[in-house]
Image 1 (tube, rainbow, N blue to C red):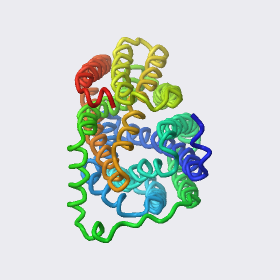
Image 2 (cartoon, helix red, strand yellow):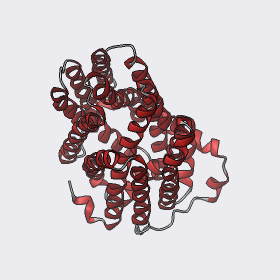
Image 3 (tube, rainbow, N blue to C red):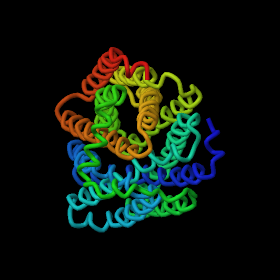
Image 4 (tube, helix red, strand yellow):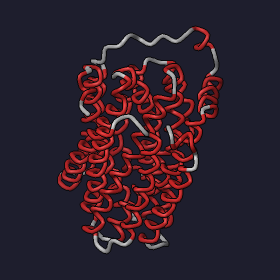
Length: 395
């Protein structure tokens, strides 16, 4: 599980991301509380979450081209520094209306399009092939621990000193992440001259064509898109359950988010110890388990009964997310890996926009228990459909 940390390069990335994810969670708590305090609307919260996911739907595939063209370390450093400058601005622009907050969130998410695919495309260059599943699991496990820390710190900062300080702390974590990435020592990536002369659209189409021509990747994308819808719906459901069904306020958001995060930590550790075999089967079992957990959440009468079921949902989330990421990484050759990872991120974000906005809209008119049950049943059905796709099942 921890063998990838023998690589100094992976270690620098891992430490930087651990700190940065703490900042991300602080930002998430501050942003959710700010929007709900100003608007009092679950639909507006759904819009806020959708705004952060929309850029990938618009620009994700094109961003992947530049991830393959540019040195991935420099891309990540630039993205971190740009995001630090942007999040610091949020408390100041909020005075002029919530629309300005949405605009900053949109730009931050656009910049993030370059960071995440670059990171996922870089990891296979930092660890041996046999340790890739372990590296992805360790990355997600440490993110879960960092998110728990971020939830506690974020809730405390927002309650005690307000959202402005929370956004400032998030900016500082981006700067720290950028510094740690500067310590990664790899040769500068050189593109072939003929590749650099091709248009962005040509290279983007090449990445999509690569996915379509691979039976495994094509099957994976077809199921992954639905898994992403349900995953995003679960974020909005946690907010809705805490604020509407259980009337628990910001501490309730933190509690339910913490339950899912604990499950993510346990699930990531379990996947990492399970070895690299049967990634496709693990992916499908994870989706089914996720669905069953949310069917149980639908019948939870109190927030404390919902907590363990949401934790199980977090465990299942890692059993479909980590194997899916590993399949994308191993099925794509190095020269096209950035575009494949960006395409997967784009599909993920498009689906997540649909998930959060749909749940946000439904939550204003449909009981939260019905929404949770519907998400759970749909996830189980998608997992069963995926079992019929042999290339994916045997990946």
